[in-house]
Amino acid sequence: MLSYQHAYHAGNPADLHKHMALAELLGMMTQKTRGISYAETHAGRGLYDLASPEALKTGEAAGGVARIVVDPATPYGRALGLARDLRGQAAYPGSPLIARLLLRPQDRLTLMELHPGEHVALRAALAGDGVAIHRRDGYAGLLGLAPLLPRKGLVLVDPSYEVKSEYETAAEFTRHLVLRWPQASVMIWYPVLAAERHADLIGGLAPLPHLRHEVVFCEAPARGMTGSGLLLVNAPHGAGRIFERVLAQGAGVFAGPTRVGT
Ligand code: SAM
Image 1 (cartoon, helix red, strand yellow):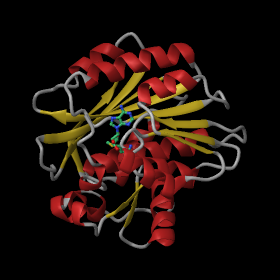
Image 2 (cartoon, helix red, strand yellow; image 1 turned 60 degrees about the vertical axis):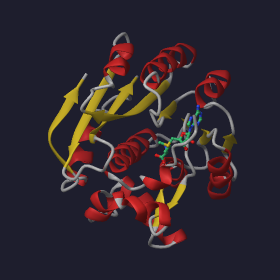
Image 3 (spheres, protein in one colour; image 1 turned 180 degrees about the vertical axis):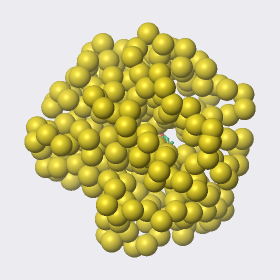
Image 4 (cartoon, helix red, strand yellow; image 1 turned 30 degrees about the vertical axis):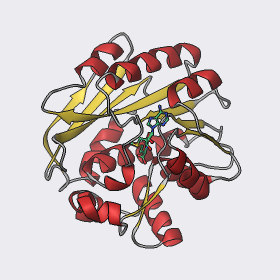
């Protein structure tokens, strides 16, 4: 099923949580000169326009990126500033573009996007040296390519959870991926809903060492999502500290109580 379009939700509080954590992680993982692999199973279109009819229809960015003053000295602030400088003030970088803007020539990106229109847009926004873009099912595609080179890597798993079984599928994919590619860290985003559907995801990841971080939104977007969660499997050393920085940067968008732990 491919009815979900991220353009309606770009820049909302959940995006901010995921994108700030991603930027912080990439900042940490690129401190040594050796290159890394960055991969996404569900990339989206890479670049969004917050003045588009889709974004204006839901107005979700108003409770997210439009609500805060982003510090340009943070990795997220650097990526957002660069995207706005390059593409205009209404530009909002999705996760692949944030990675592209923060990674270095020795790093590699591998991006999977199945939706034909989103795939074309992703190519237009990101194609270039060091970037491989595939129109494939992200789970099968990445399992087929893993382990990637360079071996040290970060994989973002960001499905739209249109079907309930997606929580279990994401966990199963992650278990298989880290068997094939033990040097990869995997960050999985999930929505916090009243129905607590993410229990299947958490249960499925129980055998793997992981960190978990949840925030509650000050102003929840529609569709019953009250908060946002991230799971970090095979977390790089010291990665727990990024979540404190994300909370500080997102003050005004994220409210307590938050859940931090394993
Ligand atoms: N990661 C993006 C970001 O933060 O900017 C947002 C991704 S959006 C939540 C999910 C994307 O996954 C959609 O663009 C959708 O078309 C795509 N998608 C859905 N099923 C897929 C699949 N099986 N494989 C690859 N992409 C898929």
